[in-house]
Structures are given as C-alpha cells and as structure tokens.
Image (cartoon, helix red, strand yellow):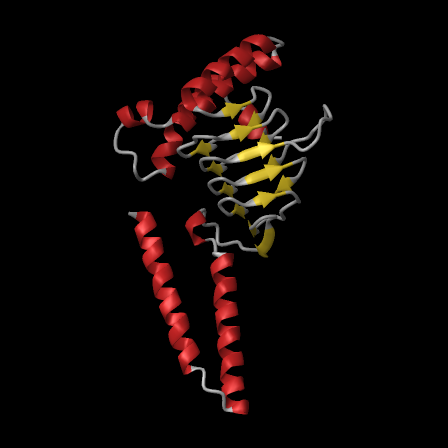
Length: 244
C-alpha cells in the first residue's frame, strides 16, 4: 500500500503536509495561520514521527508523542495507523483514527470523524479509506470495511459496510445514493439532504391525496387548512425564539 509514499523521506513528507492546506483551504492567508490555526496538520506531522518510532519498536515513545498531540490538537490518532500522502484533516477537532486504519493518498477528512473498530480482535479491525475520498463532518466509519477511491461520505453518516469506488454514501446507517460518479469533485457541500427530500416527497404525496379526496367526495378542507396554517406559524415562531 502507498508505494509512492515510501519513495520520499520523512522530512519531504512533512514539508508536503504543510503545503496541503494551501491547496485545500481557501481560508488560509499566511504561514502564521498555518502554524497556529491548523491542528489537523500538526496531528498528521506528529503522526509521521510517531509512526517511525512505532515501526522501529519504540512503541511507548510513539504513544507518548501522540498522547501529547491528543492533548494539544484534540484528536486521537493511533501511531500504528497508516496515513498516506497529502492527507488533510480540516479543522480536525474530535477526529479519531484507530490502530489498524489505513488512509491512502489525497484523502480529505473533516472534524468529528471516527475511523473506529467494532471488534476486540487484534487483527485488522478498522477501515481502509482509499484515494481521493472525502469524509464529511461527524461521519463514523466502523469496522474492517473499505471506502473505495473517489467516494464521498456525508456529514454525520454511519458507515458499516463497504462503499464502492466513485460512490456517495449518506445516512444512518449509510446508504449508497450515487454510484460511478466520476466528476472528480471533492465538494462535500454537494451531497444531497435525504431527510429534506423525504419530507418533500411526503408533502407532495399528501397534497395529491387531498386533491383526489376533494375531487371525488367534494369535501371542503379549507377550514382544516386554516387550522394547520396557524399551527405551522406557531411552530415557526417557537423555532425562531429558540434560535435567539
């Protein structure tokens, strides 16, 4: 896995890690911001170092390094996890990456993501995330499963089964809503809101049923419509008062 990664040294990897936000985050305006406002970059860099120690048998040192990183960056990344090149953890707060997780090159991870295990076995028990994948905020990818290349995982989705390449998965548990999507875009904002779409479907279905009832039985629902409109307005007012 990641033969390209093995061709460059640790220092080259670290320099590359510091360049990734300049490509992925338009909010970055200076190198000073990069030092003080990008904990995801520091978590990756520290993991590179800790991973070297871990592979050489200095497991306690590697755990200490990542323990300090967890305290400073608020991310829990196991030093044994395999992380490829140009991986970017945007914002990063609350990210958890398990021991046997594999993240390939050019993966974009947002805050609150968990690459976790569902087994107490000592073998491979965490996910494999293949190249060019985008994982939305709060998503949980659990178990020894694979998310294929160029796929997108919607925010707050819970993925417990394999996701084919070039696919989009959303929901709890996550469902595949797009396959063979090869547009190459890594914009998680384009993911559909399946709850909104379901509500729109239900509203349209109710409207059709009301129309046929009125047409067939000649029932006047105008008074009921008025009552429902009053209830809806009260709901909107209550929601606005909560926001304030």
